[in-house]
Length: 227
Length: 312
Image 1 (cartoon, helix red, strand yellow):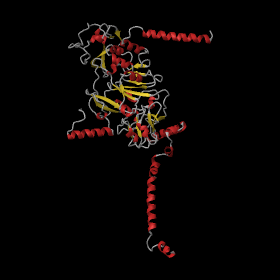
Image 2 (cartoon, each protein chain N blue to C red):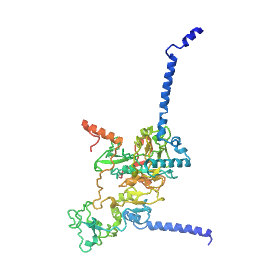
Image 3 (cartoon, each protein chain N blue to C red):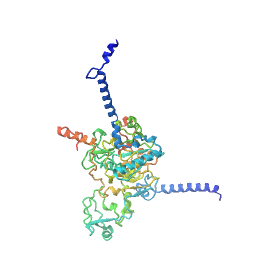
Image 4 (tube, rainbow over the protein chains, first blue to last red):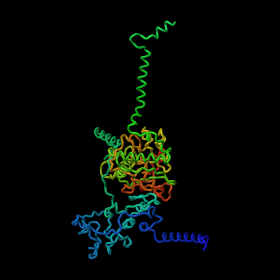
């Protein structure tokens, strides 16, 4: 074939491939959870940050529970979930009001919208998470699970305006590392905790403001707003 | 007639004429004024090289001249601190105009951005300088004058929100128009920069900025040698001399290489969104399109490239 004849064929092939790709991605139900699942594996047109993203959590993260014991090197001893949960009957009440696990999980603070443990942990396979429709989900894909309820946060996460990230704004120059939900939120008590602020200002503006406030305190005048 | 003239011009015995006295006084005053006038030159001779004194404005330097200048500055840093630094001239990329947005619903006021700025940009350690000021604001009010910077309690306080303020990289920057020597200007990617070697330290720009975004080096900034960030830009984070103005440059030594600014990377909550305003696929454009953004002090007409928004 001459090069002149190859070119239109090549273009046709490219167009067909592109259309096929669109059809594949567009087909099926497009819940937020699936959007995140797609974003986690491959570039999706809905995810502005995908394609160059690597999640912060290392691959091969093993589901385990901390026993409270330390090994001879001072490291916390963790036991795989299935060590216990393959042999015992799941307690479906746990996590609901008043019902707490009696072993291993005592230190855990649980405050997450009245969900039971088995809302998110899979009763048939404790090394997996459980989606609302009963499907299993890998432990390092927590953001897919969270997306089922937290739609606005997921939308913002997918569009790069929720959750910390490091790397490049220019995707042609390099990739990024993104936090996943569980990096910042305790999944069992997800309300963001209070922090002690760092790096108190020492510049002139801060000093002047402190002086003004001390003066107000000394003269008994009310502060602009309370501490 | 002749006799009279001779009489007046003849020197008085044992004294000086009024004319001589005035001449002497004038000469003394003149000499004093002259010595005062050249005093800066004698000072200059101690801490400034001839090359530095004769250096042209950044925009008038040829690439070769600028390379010479940057090499000189690197050597100077090596002599003063013993640290090997790299000073480069990062140029704006074509087709890029930077925009920044900050989600006030997500910011917790931890001030990690201000700290990261301090470290990244080689700020003066004793004064704890930073280009970012985090204001603690009462919920329901956007009165910047009531924002507190020196809050010291666990954050976020339930009655407050937190508003980090830094250079807004205005499209109509008042700081630029007041500069009497054109030592500060707006570049094509929207970043307002300062040529530290051209700035005369008059602080007009500091007074003109409605956001208190500029900082003045009252002293020579002190950074311990081990903490100096060696990746430096001529127009950004190189070690500043005493008596010049400085400001946030969106970390141009990072952002012009495609990297995110240090304050964004330090943000633990993802409140900060940075990107190219001219790229319709960028996150910053998504925010502008989908969030109700506002700018600070819109009424003063500065047209900032820095946007704030709340989640609905």
